[in-house]
Image (tube, rainbow, N blue to C red):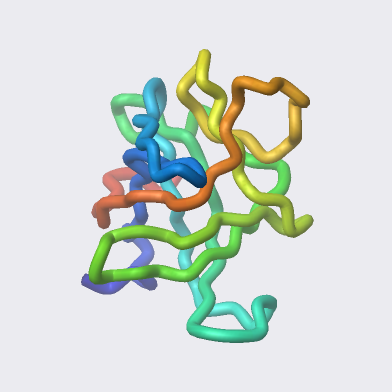
Length: 127
């Protein structure tokens, strides 16, 4: 599939921590869209895109103020080995809300994300 297509997106399904424990996302769909190559990362084949949260009808519910996010794609395992914001900060997983965030809340129970699992999606709205 063409990840650069206007209606393409990567839906984030779950994340893992450094011990490889899995944590599923809940709530609005978390999607990376407007994916494009970037030279902001020096090695490999890096991409950047805009991360948004979509409601059940495909409309944007939340927008990340630190877009764009940057990442590599491991197609064999359908994972992103990392997901960083424009400031270079890694993602955290909120164990209570089951959501991702990039501004450290200094809560011991939240998880620094090591790996992100995704599914390729065709988005129905261009919101």
